[in-house]
Length: 160
Image 1 (cartoon, rainbow, N blue to C red):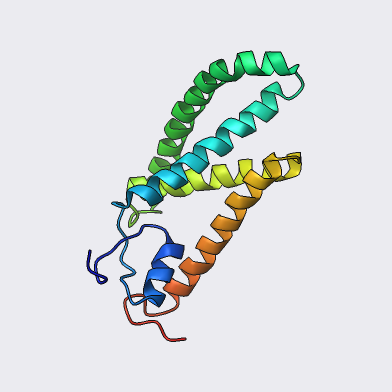
Image 2 (image 1 turned 30 degrees about the horizontal axis):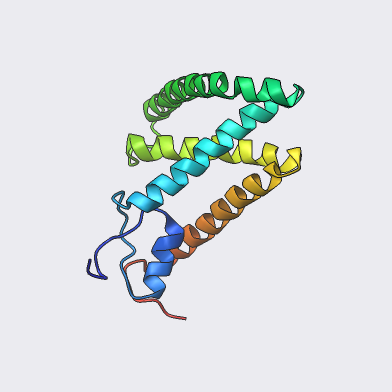
């Protein structure tokens, strides 16, 4: 792939690509990027619900309930995406978010929910704190990179 072709969706890797002389164009075709972020989102949601619903139970009960919990998390996703579509539809009716595709608007809302759940994991302590902190660090770095790209000539060469 040529350096001038878009390679990433998220701002942080696009900023790194810019610093290395590559394109800052956005693409959703990066399998590794998409799946690693998706896996992290699913892990945070699952661990949040496991902590919320199972933490007061004995270990054997927790282990037995891990698979039924996966079904509960599936229902959470269905409800969340339905609520998000209503939020996006309402925002569009109010004249907001007209320039943003539905997938990106829902992605932002999913990121916001995941960040809230990650904050809970950080406060929960133990090993869950690490999962939440990794997410919060990645989101913070990505937002900083987005600001840098927004306030610079995103398609121009990097100047240090």
